[in-house]
Structures are given as C-alpha cells and as structure tokens.
Amino acid sequence: MIKSKKEYLKEYELSISNPEKFWSNYAKNFQWISPFNKVLNWNFDEPKVEWFINGKLNITENIFERNLSKIRDKTAILWEPNDSDAEAKKITYNQLFSQVCQFSNALKKKNIRKGDRVIIYMPMVPEAVVAMLSCARIGAIHSVVFAGFSANSLSDRINDSRAKVIITSDGNFRGNKIIPVKKIVDEAIKKTNSIETVIVLNRTNMDVSMKKDRDYWYHDTVENESTESKAEIMDSEDSLFILYTSGSTGSPKGVVHTCGGYMIYSQYTFENIFQNKNDEIYWCTADIGWITGHSYIVYGPLLSGATTLMFEGVPTYPDPSRFWKIVDKHKVNQFYTAPTAIRALQSFGDNYFKNSSLDTLKVIGSVGEPINLEAWNWYNSNIGKDKCPLVDTWWQTETGGIMISPIPGVIEPKPTYATLPLPGIQPILLDNNGNEIKENEVEGNLCIKYPWPSILRTTYGDHERCKKTYFSTFKGYYFTGDGAKRDKEGNYRILGRVDDVINVSGHRIGTAEVENAINENPSVIESAVVGYPHKIKGQGIFAFIIIDKNQYNQNYKDEIRNTVSDYIGPIAKPDEILIVPGLPKTRSGKIMRRILRKIASNDFENFGDTSTLLNPDIVKEIIESKK
Ligand code: WTA
Image 1 (cartoon, protein in one colour):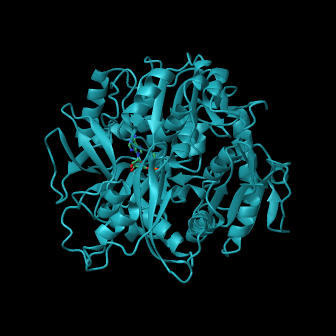
Image 2 (cartoon, rainbow, N blue to C red):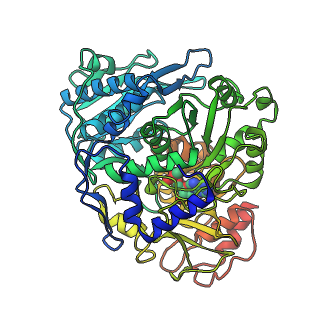
Image 3 (cartoon, rainbow, N blue to C red):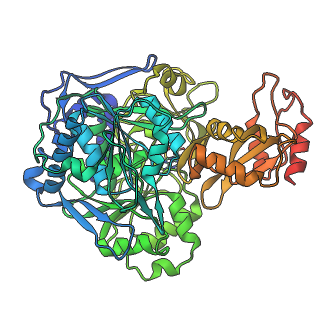
C-alpha cells in the first residue's frame, strides 16, 4: 500500500524506468502454480500484449487458498437485500469457498470445461459472485450481462460468445418491482442455438417455465456436491472473462481480460485507492454487470481479503435515504458510487441524509462519468463531511482497473479532476494529428503509451476490431476515446468521450446501436442520435428522426421508446425525440453529429465550417423544428 507522496513518486519512477521489475516485484505477492519466465511481450501494432509469460495460476486460489488461513471466518460478502426489513446476510471466506467449489463441481457435471463461455444474467445476489468465481475455478470464461438488458441484447451476446450455459434467476427484486428475469432469458434463447443448459436461482418464488433437460434449479445442481474442487491450471494469458461494451460503431464488442494481468492489477489498484484495512467494510454500489462490479465488488476486494458489501436494490427504495442508512447500518468505511447516483440523491434534498451519521466513512469514490463541480462539492461536504478524500477514479472496461485517481493521504483530490496516473500508467495527450502535446495547461485526446497488466487483449472473435477501435486512430498508442485536460501540476481532468459514445448515467451507449433500434420502428425512415447535457444522467439521448408520413401516428414517441427498450434495454430510451425534415450530411453521406450535438444542447450559433454539407440549408430547418 502506498502511504506517502514520496513513496508514490518512487514507485511511479520505477514503474516507468523499469516496468518489468516493478510488476514482477508486485507479482511475488501471488500464488503461482508455476512461475512466469518473462514479464512482458508487447507491441501496439498487431496489437499483442502478454504479461507474466508462461506463469500458471488460478485466480480463485489467490482469493481462497492463498489467504484462507488468515481470513477463514472473516466476512467476504456482506449482502444487503432489496427489502430494507429483510435480514442482511454474511458469507465468510470459508463459506464462499465451499459454495464456489460446490458450484464448480455442478458446472463440470453439466459438461462445462475450460474455455467454454458461460453467460451470467443475474440480480445482485451472492450467487452471482459464486457463479463468476466458479467459472474462474474451472477455467470457463464468464460473460456477465447486466440484468437490465433486453432479451434481444442478451441473445446478441449469447450468439457472439457462442455460450453453452446461462446462469440466471427466476426474478429480480428491484425497488417495488419484480422483474421476470427467466422469462427474458427464455425469450432470448429463441434467437440462439448454442445454449445447452440454463441454471436458475430461485430468488423470488415467481412462476417460471422450466424446459426439461435444459433448465435446472440452482439449488438442485449444488445439492450433494462436494465442497472441494481442484482449481484448473490456467496460463496467465488464458481468458478470464468477456465483458460486452458499446463503441462508436456496430454492436457491442466483447472485451477480453486474461487471468494473470487482470488479477495483479485489480488487487494493486483496490489496495491503493481504497486503503481498506483489517475489518473495515467496503461498499461499491455498481452492478456486477459492469466492469466496476467485476473489478471492485468481486475480484479486487476478494483478492485483497476485504469484506465487500453487495446491495441488491436501488438507491431510492424504500426512499432516497437508503444508501446512507446502509452506510450507518453496516458501518461502511469506503464507499464507491457514480456521479449519476450522487446527482439523483442530491436532487431529493437534504432531509434524506441528515439523519444518518456517516461517521464511519473514510474514503468516498466516484466512477463512470465526469463529476460536475456541484455534485463533487455536495458529495464531498454532505457525505464525506469534508474529511474523507474523494477519489474520482478514471478508467474503462478496456483498462480492467483504475488508471488515474487520487490516492487517500497520498495524492490530494482536486475537484472534478481524476488527478494523477497510478504507478505503471503512462498517459499522454495527442492533438488531432497525432502529435504529442508535451506542455501543461492543455487539452487533447487521452492515450496511453505503454501497456499495463490489465489492458484488454482482444475483442472476442474479432481481433481486427480491437486493433481498429483502440490502436489505429493514433498509431503506436492505446486510444481511450476520451478527451482530457492537463493542468499546471500535471493533473488530468477527463472531459468526456470524443467519439460517438454517449455516457448515460455512467452507462456507455453507442449512437449506432440506438439508431439501429430506432430504425426498426416502421414509421422511421432515418435517425441520428447524439448526447446532450442532462441534469441527473450526465448525458441524455437526443434522437433526430425522419418519419414516413404514411405511417405516422401520434404515439410515435412512445412507440420509438418501446422499440429501443425492446432492442437494447430501458437505459437506452431516448429522452428527446424530434421529427426533422432531413439530417446534416456530408457529400460522402456521413452525418455531421457535431452540428446535431449543438442543436440538441440549444446552442444555435457558430456551427463552424458547414460548406462540406450536402444541403447546408437543412441546419436552419432543424433549428426551426427544435425551436
Ligand atoms: C467515462 C467505467 C470522467 C469515460 C469504469 C470512460 C469517466 C468511460 C470516469 C468508461 C471519471 C469513467 N471521470 N469520466 N472518473 N470514469 N469515465 O467502460 O468516458 O463503463 O471512457 O468503465 O466512462 O466507461 P466503462
């Protein structure tokens, strides 16, 4: 654990001057079945990155066997159910280990082997963590799909990964709703042909249909299974998981992370950013369907032997004091959430946190989108009581772990800045021509010039796409898709996406995906979608549509929203829909989104050079429709 600025500077210096030495030193903390014989092979052209070469390990041995003698009876998962009157559950490391072994054995009986893909589509329950770790134990590759995604999104992910199994639940308690999860799975499977087995956790006791010889109850599969299971021997570079995420073009891509590098980086960053010690309670409010849930609910904390709190419900149920009540109830010491949750809770007023003492908190964190100054100040003073360092952590699904962030007691927070890179991370800013901007007090495209252990290795089944998306815009660098500003002291402030990705409530949504969904609606001829500033969500989705007058009906807005919800999920529903006579296109047919972005934000001036537009007059017409 880094304890002072001096130590940080020393570690940072070594991590840059001799990255291999730096990371191989840290790798000594882990249990290797056989040691690696080379630390790093890389080039960003193919791209190809390999860490801890020929090392053999199993990440679950590093969670359990490595630490168990010290933390056998320590709570691993502290689970707070949706219903605030229901009892919380504590699962010790030893109990979790037994459950993981039992479920690993159950998966093997269902013919799941190393390298097979397993979809996990589950609510925020401990069994979801058991499912992830059981896959890791036997070398199967998990792909967790956020349970808010629609059947259609789920079937796309099943098909792309050619998964054999889905682990799911009957239903999902979310606030005062019960979501019929298994029904969505049944719907999704209809459009796929690789699924052999569905394992269903009984969470809500709701009626579900169970197909013979395909669907099995979770509790039946683990009954009578042994609580011991030998860990599969994994190479450092074997895949650990796939996580689908949206980009500028096409359908979501499966970001692939591997066993060795991901293990090392998730523990390293968890330890340093959250400084969780002894019996302190750590809570990250993300969903396991996102990378934040993977790295900072499951792998980082559990590798570090921490107690990780897992919350099934939503921040506003039974009322908007729920988060703060949980903090007091479980004496939470480190709390990690998203700006959108902060802004939403702030909007309900002071009464909801006033009756909570929040005095156990030591570190508060933010992730997923730029945090605006107002939200930063509110969070810092009302929740952190001006005494907890606020760590604004910048990173991505593709980076696997936190890249730029304050470190409590080491690197001072600066409002709205993610501040400085962690050891091992070499960010640079490039101008649009790909030249490095060396000075400070500048803005540019944020790139990383050297590999770190948990950089993505590929996009599943399509390496070319990985190369094109991340390693081609600026040759020789990993391109993040974000713009950033660097201040006098070298602190980074993330300005948001510079590509066609919209960040809605911290969820990445590709404009092309939403447009494809909207275009499924029979009354729509063409559409263009952009992000615009939204008070709570950070960015909202604005859809400009050209409508087929013969098909027009006045409920078109609801219909389009429903189409998007069915196609992607409720999170991608457009906030605003505007009928326009045409779209601003270049002669090559490309939509000029920067114009639409300005119009969506009610900024009707200074459109820059519009001479390349096929029909420059359209801009005025769209503005008229907007006004
Ligand atoms: C944005 C989430 C500003 C950014 C871990 C990035 C942030 C995208 C921050 C990745 C932050 C994440 N400040 N922006 N602290 N953290 N982002 O893959 O645009 O869901 O590229 O990973 O979220 O989103 P993802």
